[in-house]
Length: 242
Image 1 (cartoon, rainbow, N blue to C red):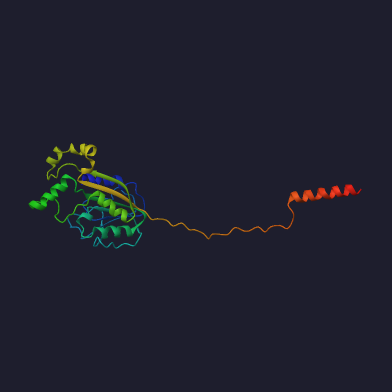
Image 2: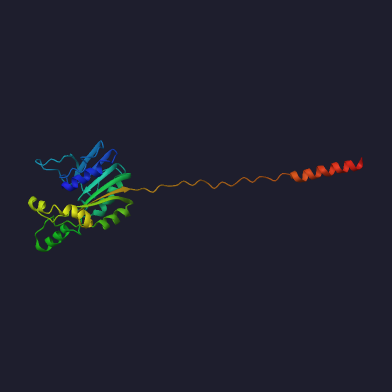
């Protein structure tokens, strides 16, 4: 959570607009560094009285149906929503609908090609689950393909959290050296990835009517060279007559 918070702060600080929305995971304040005047949080249920999120939950809804007008949001953040959703494609389609042209989307997800992915697969066999059982990890290439189908251009991508899935701070501190080593030697094996995408809308080019060139009518007069020659002939005839 600390790695994700730091990375989200760096990504959202320079995204400008008016309306920003975080969908799900109220434990992380994904918009705390953003400076938009309207920043909201939505979830599937109201928070408990003893755990109030930093942003107020403005609406409780099904993630596959966003109660926002089309092209009304400048930024949408999906922190670990797609891998625990029954219809991740529908959620992305709804996000694409509510984003304005050139609006931005940030997706946080778990990487199946990591130590955490192996731990999740082993938990399905042993019954000792490290993460919720209904989570289906989505690889980064697969996520990029989904975004490309929706005309979402991937702008940035990051991997992090290379330490093994430990439950205590003591063991996490022992594996702290794996973080800088992972960024350098095996960057694609991080447990968590973050993708920033921009909604692209193809513009139209107006083509005007094909105007015909005006045809210049031919003049009845003689060309200049013929007129000069005719004038010289007249002068020569008059001289011979005299």
